Amino acid sequence: MSTTGKPDPQSRLLGQRRFLPYFLTQFLGAFNDNIFKNALIIMIAFQGAQFSSVDINVLTNLSAGLFILPFFILSATAGQLIDKTEKSISIQRIKIAEIIIMLGAAWAFISAQLYMLIALLFMMGAQSTLFGPAKYSYIPQHLKNTELIAGNALVQMGTFIAILVGTITGGLLIADDEGRTWVSIVLVTVAVLGYLSSRAIPVTPSPCPELRINWNIFTETWRNIAFIHSNRTVFLSVLGISWFWFLGATYLVQVPNYTRLTFGGNEQVVTFLLTLFTVGIGSGSLLCNWLSGQKVEIGLVPFGSIGLTLFGIDLFFARPASVGPELLGLVEFLQQGTSVRIIIDIVLIGLFGGFYIVPLFALVQQRSDPAHLSRVIAGNNILNALLMVLSAVMAIVMLGSGVTIAQLFLVVAILNAAVAVYIYTLVPEFLMRFMVWILIHSVYHVRKRGLENIPDEGAAVLVCNHVSFVDAMIIAGCIRRPVRFVMYYKIYNLPVLNFVFRTAGAIPIAGKHEDPELMEQAFDQVDDLLSAGELVCIFPEGRLTTDGTMRTFRPGIERILERTPCPVIPMCLYGLWGSAFSRHRGFILWRIINGIRSRIDFTIAAMKPPESVTAQTLQHEVQEMYAVSAKARGY
Image (cartoon, rainbow, N blue to C red; front, side, top):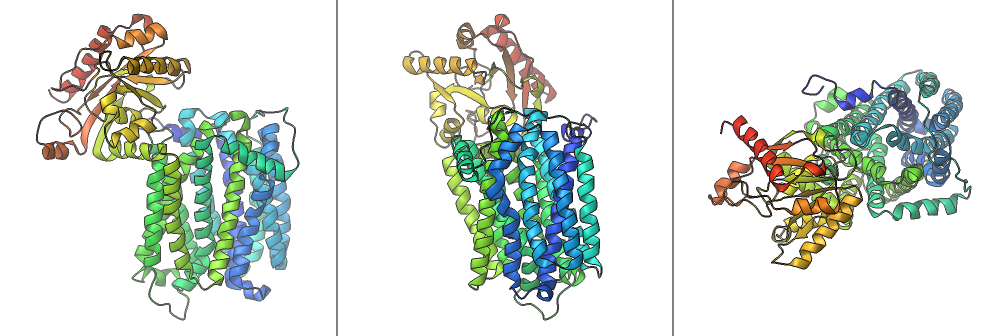
C-alpha cells in the first residue's frame, strides 16, 4: 500500500487483465519447469546410482546443460516467430506444447526412464525457448515506461517464487515413496492450468506482421547478436543479464551436491537452501521498485554486483571444517555452528541478485526498438544460454579436476567482480547512477513533492534554484526520466563530479565574457535536445549561492524559449545550504556531520506554457516554493 492508503502501482497491476493472466501463465510455466528440473536433479543426486552407472556430477551437469541448450540453438527462430505473430495466440500454442511434453514426462517418471527424462528436459527447454521472447516483449506493449520496473519486478518475483515453490514441491514429492507418481500427476495438472490462464491473455498485436522468417538458425543467430551489438548500452546490459544466469545456474545446479558433500545435508537441507536463495531473489526484485522510486534505476546494478561478490566469497569461508558420516536433516543442520552464516550468505546472494537483474531487464525493454524487441530478447536468450552452457562445462571440468564445489563458488564470485569492473568501465553510466543513488539514499533523505508534474514524454525545460555542487545529482536521482543539465563550466570540471556530469551528458556553459563560443555551443545543444523531445534542466542563477539567498534569475531561459518554445517546469531545492557541498563557510567537519541524512525538500510545480514565462515570474514562483519549505521547517 502507498502512504495515501491507495494500492501502489505495483499491486494494482495484479488486479488488471492486461497483466494478471500473463503473470499467472508465466508463473505456472516457471513453476512446472522447476518441479520437473528439481525432481529430476534430486532423483539423480540421491537415487541416480539405481538407474545409471554414469557419475552423478556428470549426469547433474549434463541435465542442466541440456535444458538450456535449446535457448542457444532455437532462440533466433523463436524471436522471429513471436515478433511476427499475435502474442496471445503464440502463448496458447506454447502452453499446448507444454501439456504434450508433460504427458511424456509423466510416463517416464512412472516408468523410471532416466535417460528419457533427460531427453524430455531438453524438450521442455525448447518449449521455454519459445516462451521467453513472448514473456519479456509482452510487458512494454501493455505497461507504461513508469510501470516497467514494477512489472519486471513482479515477473522476477513471480518467477523466483515459482522456482521456490516448484523447488520445494519437486523436492518433497520425489522424496516420497510414491514420489515419481505424484510428480507425474502434478506436472500434467499444472500444464493444463497454465493453458487455461493463457486463454485470458488480452490480444497483443504483432509489432512486425510482415516479417519474413529466416529459418537458418546460424545466420539468424548471428544477425540477432549483431543487432543487439549495434546498441552499446543494450548489448552490455544483455551481457550483464547473461552473466547473472551464469552465476544463477552455477548456484542452483551445484547446491544439491554442495549440500551433500560440503556439510553433509540431506534432501530437506537442499530444499531449504534453494528456498532461501529464491526468497532472496524474489525479495530483492520486489524491493527494486521501492528503492528505484518507480523508475528504471540502473544505479542498483553495481550495488547488486557488489553484494553478489562479497557474499559469494564469504560462502566459501563459511563451510564447515569437516563432515560427519551421516547425512544431516534440517533440524540437525540448523544446530550446526556454521549454519547461520551459510543461511545469511545464501539469502543475501539472492537479494543482491534481485537488485542486479530487474533494472537490467527494464533497461533492455526501455532502450530497444519495439519492432525488434522479441528478437532482442531472443538474442538475450542466446547469450544467456551460451553462458549457462559454459557454466555447466566449467563446473564439469573443474569438479572433474579435483576442485571442490565450495572452491567453484569462490572462483565465480571473484569472476563476478572482474566482469562487473569490465562492464562498468565500458558503460560508466551504471557507476554514475550508482553514485547518484547512494547520495540520495544514504547521504541525504529527499522528500519529493510534485513528481507527477514531470510529463512521461515530450520536451520541457526544468528550472531550479542552485544551492550546492550536487543539485544536478539529486534532481537526476529523483526524476523518473533522463534529464540533461546545463551547468556552469567550472562546476562541470570539478574532480570526481566531472565523471558524473560527463557521463550524464551534462552541458557546460560559460558567461558571455568568459567564453562566448562555449556559451553558444550550449544554447545550440539545448535547442537540439528540446527539439528531440528531451528534458533539459537549467539553473538560471548562473552560479551557486554564496550566502544561502537566491540570486537573480538571468534571461537565458527566455532566449531558450525564443528558439524552441516548450513548457517550463519550476522546481525548488531546500535544505542543502550549509552542507559540505554548498559554499557555506562553516567548519567543514561540522558541515559533513550535519549533512548526513539531513532532509532535503524537492518541490516541483505545475507546468507553465512558454508564452507566460519570464525569468522574473519563474524566480517569483521558485521563491514561493522555497518559502513554503522554510515555513514547514519552522523558519
